[in-house]
Image (cartoon, rainbow, N blue to C red):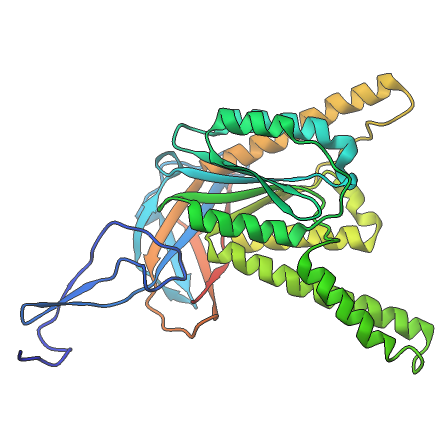
Length: 372
């Protein structure tokens, strides 16, 4: 059959419909080229960017369309293919509960308030998946409807185990990536302090650190030895943090967290690192890391404990209300990247909106994606 040069007599037809994950060029619905009666398929990369837009009072900004958004990739403006609003896009939630001893005093009302949140925010097409963060990640409920999810949440009990935070975030991200239907909004809500004491990569990394330092302990002072140990352990944690973040980015997942420790996370370096984990995940994916100032609920005075518990519940309900507003303000912006990048390259993405609001606006969007 006669074949003409690829640059002659080309008709470009954009094919609508179908969705894939942002970094998978093989599955993306590609343009078609018709050449001499023969259809040639050209691969392209469909990028999904979840974007939440709220005003200065935290209320959702609704009713936006393609013309209101501007997306740049590596500073190049991209042509937007579609913008899906929250009320027309199913929601897939993975709820992660920390069952370790660090969250025990707050656990009951966190569980109850989270159950009410699901009851209020989930619609018939939405699904929730429940994980516990303990010694290992445990999937306690596959994706299911709201009332089943509420029943599951009410049965979760603290176990006073070690905490595999990174492994659980990665497990939840991979689960959502594999099981969520196309064109759904995927989010993780983690109720935890973000500290990790038992993920596989952390344990293996620490073992290697101890072995390497053992060979140096006679050559350096005890102060130098301690500083070296801290630095090497932090390097291990950052490495595992990066792996979990990549799993979130690869699944187009927005990360939210609520730290039961509140502002007390600042008391020690491990707690600061844990909160830093969650802030990193939230900023990079377009979510929010909440740090409520919870009051103690295990005081000697039952009256004061009850009063503090009521105030804590009020604060937690307010956080879930803000989270609900963000989800109502979440758009799914989709475009076909015009860039050519090597595998594993992180491509920064910048989103702006053309909206005037007397209260100002706040945009939360993923900061980029990894190319496969």
